[in-house]
Length: 223
Image (cartoon, rainbow, N blue to C red; front, side, top):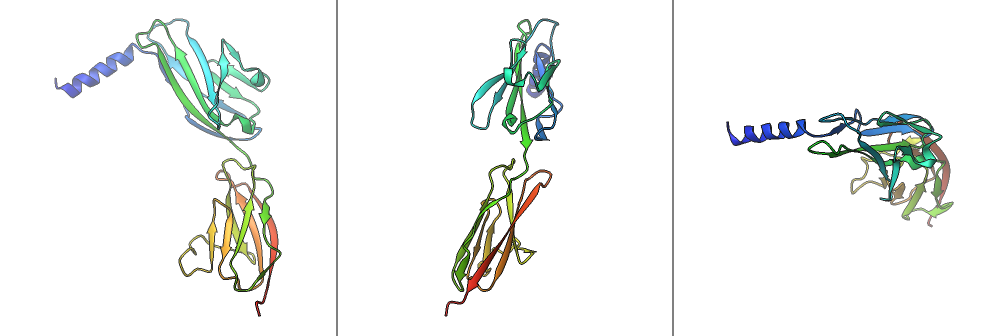
């Protein structure tokens, strides 16, 4: 028996004497105010009492207990419940987004600890955008138009329209008269030529929530 086969056999044997933890879904996405399950199941070498803990790492990197000492955190007790070792959320908020760790300790198993990580993204529709657009500009000048919103999750992407027609991202070559940054929400027109009516649209990355804000930019002749 070669060394690789011996190593595989040793790994299989080791896992047979270890607590194992798994989930049906390691990346969960659900709309705000909806419900979802963070699934966590485990198998043991031998039946025994275990210590089950859930922890959350929020978007700022802060760690907190979600389930500890056989009890859900106080802020979750009215809108979530434990289903065996899994967590059922009934009313998600945007603050629930983050990384969740399901940790199982089985003292009598030879490998007595394992954890899994589940990522939860709570989807939030974008708000009506705020746009920084000058009311007038001189023909031939360079103008940067900006739009932004802070509610969307995941972060919104932006699309600009000129007189009702979409400005395509493909028009970013050196001879293009405009540049669009879909992530920053900016449109740079170079040079400015005639009357523009722009409509901005923010779309979240999931389920294409969309809102629009119309703005008109009047261009004056430079001579």
